[in-house]
Length: 268
Image (cartoon, rainbow, N blue to C red; front, side, top):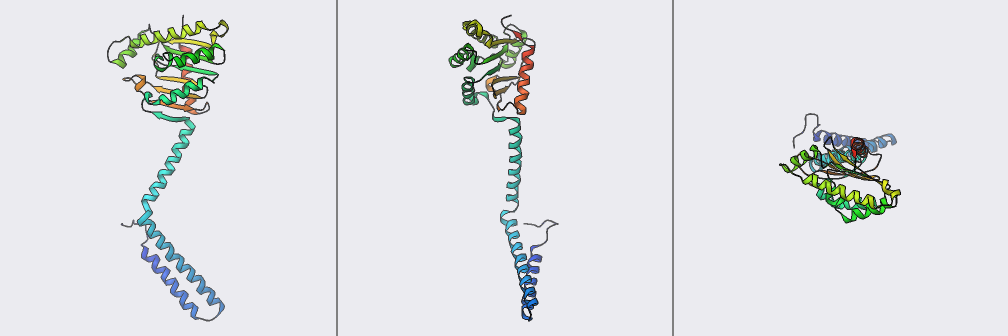
């Protein structure tokens, strides 16, 4: 291993330590308490210099750069973890289909939540088509314990057809049909509730713009899917976010509220 220009050769320190030990031996020959003290001090200094030189040599050849790199990587990882904690991001999934376990936990969270917000292109797969979700919606909204705000694409608007074209690569009614099914399911459940609790389910449709992410929130737990131009939601990146005071939670909560304010009530 070559020495860097600013590194002092190891032999200089070893020689210095050895020289100090020789001085210690010579002063010990001289009688007198002071000279004995000088001998002890110089002996300790010499041994210390040699020991440090040996440890430094071992560090450079055995530990050295690899160990220092590991320390720097640990420091970077600690900083990254601190940053992630502030964002509220707990898990990242390349595809939403990989987050099925987190989706199940989110549905369980809905059973004890006061507020649930849901925004998606159609919210059909795993949500409005799920008997478990339908049961949660009936029970929680039917007793007024949970307020639901649910928003999907308007099946009759050109922007919905455009989104289907982007995902499928050709003209398709798939998204419009799924939105119709979702809206019909939600409206049927809402109408089945006692009139005093029907406002626990609010339904809106997005008519004038595409949506850029799916947001499913139950109190302080959120799943966000970032929609990509060429992929369906199932194949898109998904984030699990926890904590109302974290930066990403606030960001996507604001996004939901902004879309809600511009969406239209359903039925109109």
